Image 1 (spheres, protein in one colour):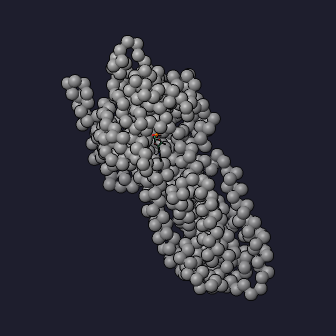
Image 2 (cartoon, helix red, strand yellow; image 1 turned 90 degrees about the horizontal axis):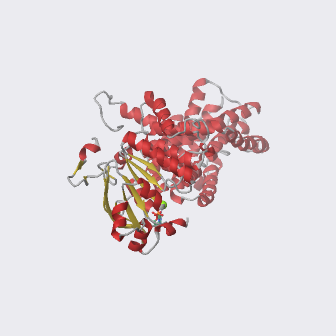
Image 3 (cartoon, helix red, strand yellow; image 1 turned 30 degrees about the vertical axis):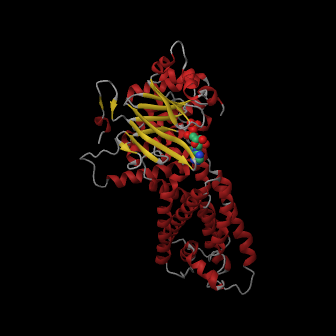
Length: 267
Length: 270
Ligand SMILES: Nc1ncnc2c1ncn2[C@@H]1O[C@H](COP(=O)(O)OP(=O)(O)O)[C@@H](O)[C@H]1O
Ligand SMILES: [Mg+2]
């Protein structure tokens, strides 16, 4: 049952049966193909960024990975389970921080955590201790009894991360986790996510249109444009393709004809 | 992880897990009501007005034959059923609201079975229904309605209100999954609530209706709720359809709604 035993690492370092495996994953909305034959593999514990401008298909891809949206065709295997055939198993092995704020503003931070602890079937005897530890890890102990509607954007994001990882998922998906946050808030979210990753060893898959942020925190990234994967690799590999002191934004512009950063800046 | 089987887990463990997940949803709703109880009170104004104004005026209409008691006796259970309906029918709107806010994603991405989410929301709506019942009992008692306070009857009234709240809130959730936006829901909600209310025995007996309307009233779950409440709330209460039949009708409607809503609920976040 434990999905991690299904993974072995090949001699060349690439994972066989990664924690996320997409094969020709496609989603259409009417005549629009939002995600177009995406194939990628993400290894356990890896930090992976999906980069692209608004409308590129990042959220749609995430929604398919998290079973929120059925694929039109193709396949996605998450933590060893097929999103189309075993969605409930997938959901019990992942965490998801969606693009819109998903913590309940009318509940306190602690009440939100208890809600998640129950939904994820954390045994009653361990609930209080696990919730307290998770809140502490995210730096929210002081604010635990305040209504979430009084939280800053960064605090609310950290609460959502805590809610999404109480059950120690194999992968944490985060859709534009830092959009709209000030630089301090962004740094705090990432510092806490990195701590958490060290603690539970989950892979982290996130989308962003901040190139600098992606480059700083990710192991590998995929450039997404028009629903397709334009390029995939480590930030260094991708920059080396252009040579000299190219930035990731240069790579993106070169590969897709549009600027990722500029395209992403319009909300 | 939660899904793994360990030899010490009893065969009943999945039932306990399911109940925990249902309770997770209900408890969150109840906590929100505790933070903001004003809403419960303001919702009780409308049924009280119905009893005071509509009830007092209609009591003077001669020739309105409603059986043993007074018209006010006849009306009080109908108004309770009405207020349960009006409160429950807002549930779809709050589901759309939760989707717009993003809160619904938190539920949808959890491993809880969708049916547990639907039932959790449905049970939470009965807390509102029951708080309406308290106000209406008080008001009706002050107005001299011949209420019965026998414990077994009160217990059954609670059962009826829980089932009817769950049924109509789940029905409302289905509508929300079809129309998907707040604006459209507001339109459709009005359009549905009034026929459910007027094509029932809530404020006049079915026997006064034209034949075609009788058929609709007999297929309307609200009629069975009203019949059950009328039987149980009033000391002079007599059932038209039989309490067991009333309960069975509500249970059937509730099961149908839960099955349909379970299939449709995930569509809201797509
Ligand atoms: N539910 C939907 N119905 C119709 N079109 C959609 C829906 N969701 C997304 N799209 C379209 O799919 C494309 C990709 O959207 P999205 O995945 O949200 O992009 P991103 O997250 O990269 O900004 C966009 O053109 C968007 O308008
Ligand atoms: Mg998006």
